[in-house]
Amino acid sequence: MAWDRYPEKKWAGHPPEFWIGMILYVAATLLIAKFLRSAELQPGLRFLLAAAPLLPLLMMGRGLWRMIQQQDELYKRIQLHALAFACALVIVLSLILGYMEDLEVIPHINSMWAGQVLVFAWGIGAGLLTRRYR
Amino acid sequence: MRNSLRDLREAKGWSQQELGDRLKVSRQTVIAIEKGKYDPSLPLAFSIARLFSRRIEDVFTPER
Image 1 (cartoon, one colour):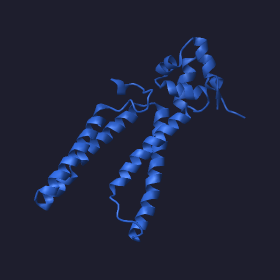
Image 2 (cartoon, chains in turn blue, red):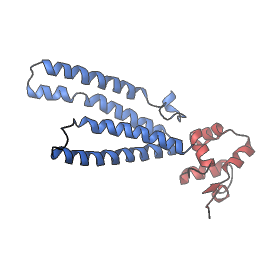
Image 3 (cartoon, one colour):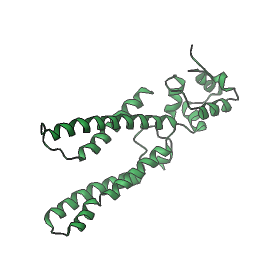
Image 4 (cartoon, chains in turn cyan, red):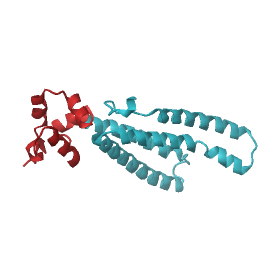
């Protein structure tokens, strides 16, 4: 299978479970949100349903882990450096935005932004680092 | 770190992809090592030296 080989294109190697997990995550978040906004449920059940997208997220995480495990040492280094860059960016942004939010200088922002910024910065960082080693 | 990987590879008539397959690394890793943009780990450096039947210091030399 393509993801069992050392990838020439850095994003060509995602295993199927990553993509399946992503589709399930998007579908679950949309459907569960629509359902919970209209249905009257017990708080415990609401909590369980709202936390359900965690399962496809874990599936995506396992897919990413497997992809990185299959990569050679240069690609692992690129992923590690890109992830470190993304984490540093999220830490800095969360500290300053959290502080500003606490002071009511800016409006409340949904904390989902942290994951989105991390994934985006990870991708950009990996792309830039891959170019550096060409 | 300087290295003679390109000369050694060309002497064998191997492509970068072929060398990568033999070392179980990507073609990009071979390119990065040949260009001196990436210093391989010690296990990979030993694998390279062993593949060409050389000592590791014959393939890799520190820059002064």
